[in-house]
Image (cartoon, rainbow, N blue to C red; front, side, top):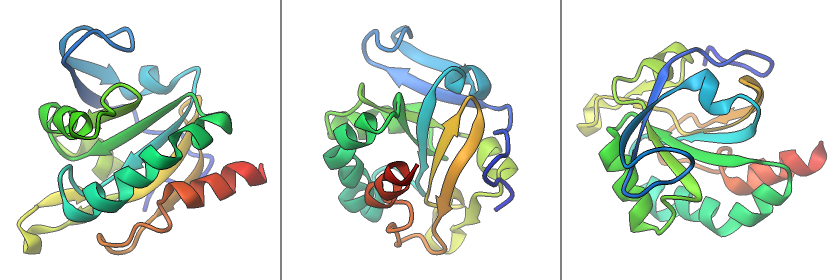
Length: 171
């Protein structure tokens, strides 16, 4: 992992697809500058190996959905889930869980943010190619104030909402 606590996130682009007007964005695909998307906010950015993959869909995202209000009550303005997927896949994954507006689903389709932060993992052996490691970060004003990344894709405890909540409560 190249990115650490106190590092500024790299300037890159995320893509987000909206089925209706939300978050000040228009219907359709919206391209976001990473710095503008997070500036002025305290956000959680959670990276996953892929939308609709087993651990991501059965454990990781449901964990954040269940604990979303608690995370927000601890001072978090927005929660983003990110994967090396296109914005359409991310949007429909969020819609599947009825969370497309409260937990924002953003794509890093070419993996540029993922590679630049050193959070990339080659999952070609499983037919997935370049993907993001599972991680959870707190970003304040584009600066990383907390980050935990998993060593193996099925693991999610270090990147879980419960682990994040322990950190947020300790501050």
